Image 1 (cartoon, helix red, strand yellow):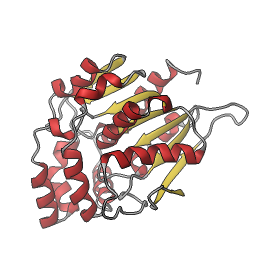
Image 2 (spheres, helix red, strand yellow; image 1 turned 30 degrees about the horizontal axis):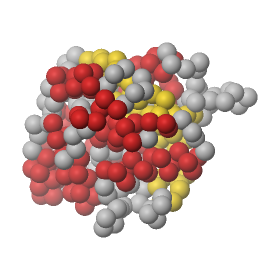
Image 3 (cartoon, one colour; image 1 turned 45 degrees about the vertical axis):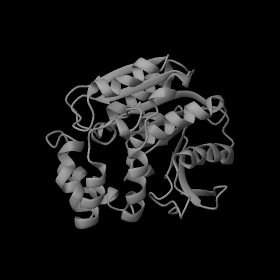
Length: 269
């Protein structure tokens, strides 16, 4: 992995996958993972996308191999600024930005605050913020603290994916990978995201936007997801019927092909 230092002193890690023709100037695509995730969660997306785009997969602060934030270093604004500072570091001007769940909340905010840097936006399994959901997020944090992250994920895995459609080995890998996240970081990250609702600001997103919703998500209704379509002027909205929340992990090839199709309608790749 590569790394860069943010303006507030953290080392953040990222991976670049670029199998584009070396004589062509390729567009950059940034993928932002969900809470309890890392860049590794997009492993299956890379073959679908890296031939046509320079794919950048950062670890959010406090996740994966990136440094844990100290006091005052974990704010919603700071998470967005990390994306912009990464773009500056790798010499990317205007990019395509896609996110999963909490990563998509961050992506939406970047598109709102820094419209000149975003060519297209894609949001998977994301409403305008966790504040609109009906989950007891404080209960999540308490339960994780009591039994550990891996055991909590075992208890709630059916909320995240259809166990009849994924391999047992994948479930074990998903839980082990997510459990690498520091519990003390989640205890700060989850309440932060639970207070986010970007609904009033969504009309500021002027770039072409793809929103893909899991139709069987116990955390949000399809109507809550559809608020993106209602508020963002140029939004294509798609529902994956019957699937729980973690579509980007459970059906990664489908999601990556959806994103590739969307991007190619706005690029020459």
